[in-house]
Image (cartoon, rainbow, N blue to C red; front, side, top):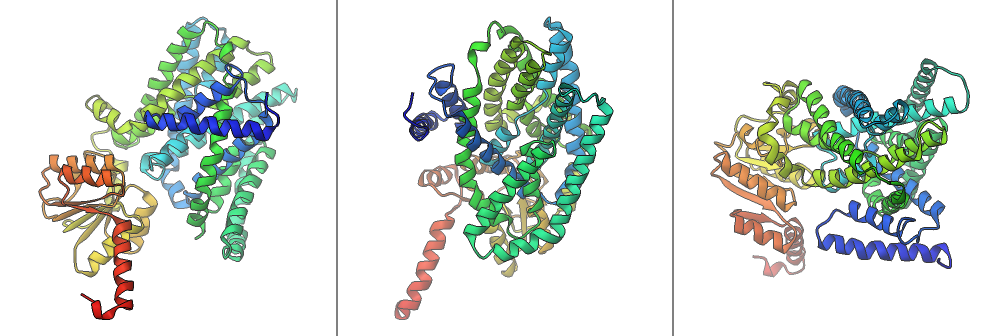
Amino acid sequence: MFADAYTEFTVLLLTAAVIGALGVRLRQPLIVVYIVVGIAVGPSALGWVTARDQIDLLAQIGVTLLLFVVGLKLDMHLVRNLGSVALATGLGQLLFTIVFGYLIALALGMSAMTALYVAVALTFSSTIIIVKLLSDKREIDSLHGRIAMGFLIVQDIAVVVAMMVLGAHHAGSGDGWLAIALTVAVKLVVVLALIAALMRWVLPQLLRRIAGSPELLLLAAVAWGTALASAGELFGFSKEVGAFLAGFSLASTPYREAMSTRLTSLRDFLLLFFFIDLGAKLDLSALGGDLGPAVVLSLFVLIGNPLIVMAIMGWMGYRKRTGFLAGLTVAQISEFSIVFVAMGITLGHVGQEALGLVTLVGLVTITLSTYMILYSQALYARLKPWLGRFERRVPFRELAVEQNEAGPAEAEVIVFGMGRYGKHLAQRLERLETRVLGVDFDPETVAHCRQRGIPIRFGDAEDPTFPETLPLAGTRWVVSTLPQLDVNLGLLDALRRHGYRGRVAMTAHAPADILRLEHAGVDRVLQPFDDAAEFAARTIGQELHPSQER
C-alpha cells in the first residue's frame, strides 16, 4: 500500500498522534487509544501494517527498556522484604485461576484440553501494560506497586515454564514434567549466580569508567538491557525476564537514577509500537460467536483474580486498600495469553475457536482493567464498605512497616512526599529547630531518609484513612510536595474529615491547579519552579547591584 517502510511509519505516527490527541481531549487513556489505532490499521480494518518485522523489533526494544527501568528501581533489601508476599500471591493467583477457570470452561462446553489451555491463558497478566499504567500514575514505587511487580514477575516466569514444557513436548524430547522443571530451576540458579557475580565485581567498576559521559552511559544501559534480554531468551527464558534482571543488576549502583531518567522518553516512544503491534495482531475476524463465553470469562478475570489477590494479601497481614490496589493489576489477561493459545493451535491441541475466544477476553479485560487502575482510588472509595472481610483485625505486616518507619509522637510540620524537594524542605526546617515528620509511600525513600536521620513514616497521601494515624493534634502545618491536583484535593478533604485545623501548603505547577487549590482553601500554594527562579534572580541581582539590596 505504501511506497516503503519509512512512509508507512510516517503514516502510523501521524495517525497515532492525531487519534492520541483526540483521546487526550476526551480524557481517555493513551494505552487504550494506541490499541485502537493498532486495530484500525491492522488486518481487521484498514490493513495498513505491512512492515511487521520492523514494528515488532521496535516493540520488543520498547518492552526491553520498560522492564529494564523497572528492574533499576529494585534492590536486594526490597526483594528480601517483599519476596514472600510476591511469591505467595503470584502462585496463589495462578493456582486459583487455573482451577476455577478450568471448571468454568468445562461448564461452558469446552473439551478438557481446550479448557486447560483457556484456563492457563487466563492466569497471565500483562506486565507491560501494568507497569506503564503504574508508572504514569507514579505508583510503581508504592507498596502495592512493588508487590504487584513482584507477583507479575512470578507470572512471567510461569509463562516461560509453560511454554518451555510445551516446546519440549513438541520437539519430542520425551522429558517428563519433573525433568523439565529441574532444567528450568538449574538454568535460573546459574543465571542468578552470574548476575550476582557481575553485580559484585564487574558492573560497578565498569560504570564508574563510563559515567563521565551521559551519552555513553545511556548507550551502555540500552546495550546491557538488550544483551541480557537476548541472553534470557538464549537460556530458555523470555526477553522480559532478561531485561528485568539487567535493570536489577544495576539497581544498587549510584548511576541508576541517571540511567532511568534518560531512558524514560525513549521507552515511552518505543512502547507506542508495542501497543500498535498488539492491536494489529488482534484479528477480530476470528471472534465468531464467542460473545457469551467471553463475557463469562472476562467477568471471572475482572472480578475473580483481584479477589484472590486481596484474600491472600489480607491473610498475610496487609490492609484491604493495599490488597485492593494490587489486586486490580491482575484484572486482565496478557498478550502472552494469545501467544500461548496460538502455540497450542500449532501443536494441534486446540482449535482456532479457542484463539478467537481468548483474543476477545483479552480485548475486553485489557480495556476495562485500564480504566479500573486509572480510577482505582474512586473505585476503592465506593467499594470500601464491602472490603472489610479482606483485612485482618490487625494487619500486622503493614503495621510493622509503619512502626519500623515511625517518626516522632508530635510534629510541628508534616511533609507529604519526601523526594528531592520534600527532603530538602524537611532538612531546612530541622535546621530552624522545627519538629518535622516526613511521609512517603516509597519503601526505598523511607529507608534512605531514616539512614540520614530524617523522621519519616511509610504512608500514602491517596489513602483517605492514613491521616488518622498521624499526630495531627500538635501539627501547625501540613505540606504536600506532590504535584498531582487530585491527590492534593483528596488529602485536603481527608485532613479536614479527621479534624485537622492547622494550616496547609500544597504544590502545583499549572495556573489552573493553583486556582483550584486556592479555591479549595489551601493556605499556601507552593510553586517550586517559580519560587526557585525568583530566589535565583534575587541572588544574582544582589550580586550585580549590591546597592539595590532590600
